Amino acid sequence: MITHANTSLTIDASGLSCPMPLLKAKQGLSKLQPGETLWLLATDPASERDIQAFVKLSVHSLLQFEVSEGVYQYLLQKGRNDAL
Image (tube, rainbow, N blue to C red; front, top):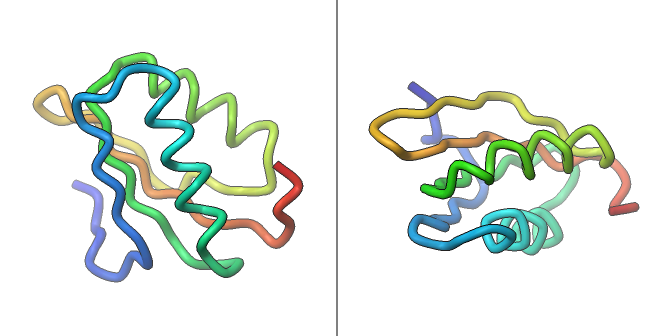
């Protein structure tokens, strides 16, 4: 289970379809300082592909990921540069 007690921001994108979970994550990350974390919840299976691809192309990190009872949980850490 993802530990989210110390996350800087939580976004519940449950019920939103692609690409909205990714867009919500990007909006949330833009509000954070480098090193802070975002806990994203989504129910769209396509969010897994989208978040994985986004992290590969950005300076942000995916610290943890899990799927439990149809809920995709991502713990993202903001990187040092907001290039994306």
